Length: 374
Image 1: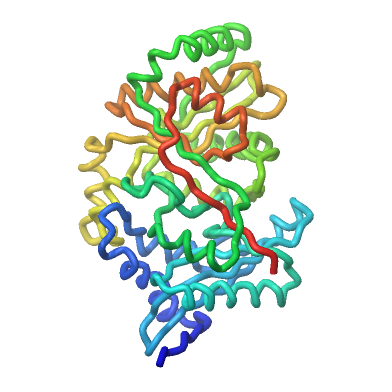
Image 2: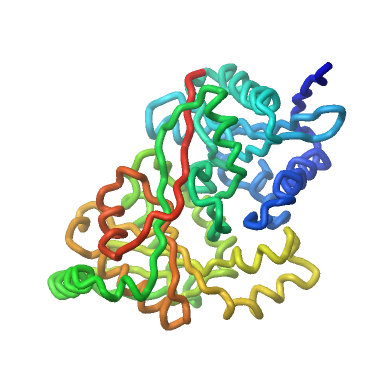
């Protein structure tokens, strides 16, 4: 006789900690998984402190069998998304589950019912919490650890989603970039050189001494540059401030680039060292001594991730992205880093995909956003 699945709402701090820590049991045999920092998870899931909740609401659910946690999920209603896109889409996120369809169905049903009660018509995900956070389910590329802030999951999660009735909403691509290949791209070098001369673009790097004013530059560019993209959600000033505060200890200033033309900031690139290589050894704990590794292990990092590279619409299609790519490449090389990941890129974002291909980038990982009608 099969034992039924119990779905319970997370209501207390102790239950929230169980929600966070249960993730470890689903990856105990996965050598490529990178444990998240528990203190970061507590912060992002805190409805009082995460500025995401100034325009959204969410609840967290645990699945149990015989008192043992066998899955978890978050139900998310993002008012900013629905206002921006004029739709009624809800989201699921922070999904973890045993390899059992009944458990997955119970978790997805819990979110579907939660969203339905709030008048939403579709469920999309995984989004933890939005497209500005960890986004998508790993579809291809399971033989490698994720780069910084990218997702990772067991392959059977795809079957759980497919059998529930989810369909593909969009695929996201991650390109592997190798210095030795990029520098042989005559087209990239030529386009970058012409664009630099024609535009008079000036590339500067992050000034940590004037961090607040530098952040204002990011705010001026970010929402303009990415607005046309599918699934895009504007970041509020409070969200950008929070993100900057989180990333500040890890930022390599020479890899945070601004492009200016005639004194106007027209583009921005954020490239981060792949600290996942270090986090993997920490097993979720920064203290008491693991924070030291952030500095001592920094020189061992061999990968960087191009997290964002955006140019405001009126300056797009002028080859200026090639200028940014070359700057990123050369600066990373000067730090001893010759491997990079450009991610994530929408499968139908022609401009970004073309740029990655010109750099002879290889699509080496894919992620899927699922959707289903409620």
